Length: 185
Image (cartoon, rainbow, N blue to C red; front, top):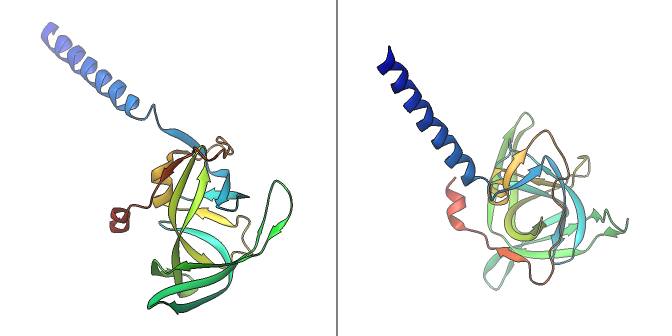
């Protein structure tokens, strides 16, 4: 019985050591709530973002979406209609971005094709260049939805809490460019 107990004790210490070392891997990760404030850059528009682990690709409220060709490349022209949470002013500018890819979304309502562009978003103290599918989210509570691809860059998601990080991205903010390897997941 003594050897079995010693063996179990040794295994327990090993498991404890592994748990301690694995949790230290996450010690540096920031923790975000399921709703956070964010800035859409470079305009610094303050919006509420829903972090949704059920979605793969992030989504941004866009209106009047049209594809066009510019210098032999496919581009997207769209109008952002975002109410700045800090000032209450409505940002409603026309934006043009290169088309990054097209996304087919399948749901209860059928299939939907959406253009995807790369845009910058400030979360915490870092600016992330992320993929955003463009769609009219007027009927949605949150104009910005961050999917798993984006969440994986941020850190950890605490689904029990909201507003754990404040966006504070100045000129010296860390910048995380889009990684095409993310497209494989």
